[in-house]
Length: 224
Image 1 (cartoon, helix red, strand yellow):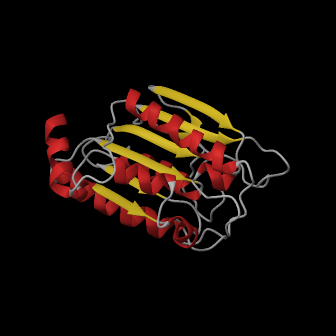
Image 2 (image 1 turned 90 degrees about the vertical axis):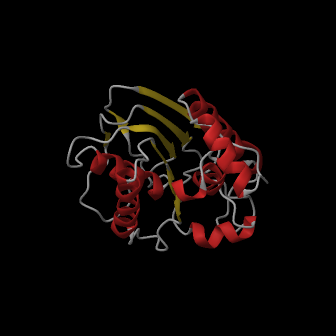
């Protein structure tokens, strides 16, 4: 299964890209039937309200899929969505019956800025492979957004910084309502390309866009 949580106000700025973002496209291209994919836009408020509700909804879905036998868990998130992704990993580490392993955790410039008491500073041990694409803090770009997700696990951890704005790491285009920088249209996609390379190395697979549901199900069966 894939759980994908986008960044703050993504519902609004994704409209400028015909619904696309790096997080949305990651889960869309993920090789699995539609029933094994969960996507949620990020909080609508810059204050971050709604983090807990999104985490609760995603966990409820994941518990149901896990009970149905869907045991391979991959999670990605941008900005506060990355924070929610870490929250989900920590919750899964405490599930009844033993910690649920998370094969891959993909963080797109995850930040801690949200009203929640659930600590996300350290990635838990149940994460087998984690990749974090971070921005360089240049020109005071979102200097007040500190990254979250210090590695504390026992698996593999990869981190890389990109000369792109916080918004572009998530897929926002220059000139839009997010006001990404002029070089972001080139550098932002590099973060997503790197993330997918790390994901593939950890066992994830993606399919070309445009395949029908029947074709996608066939690809997933062939990889089972």
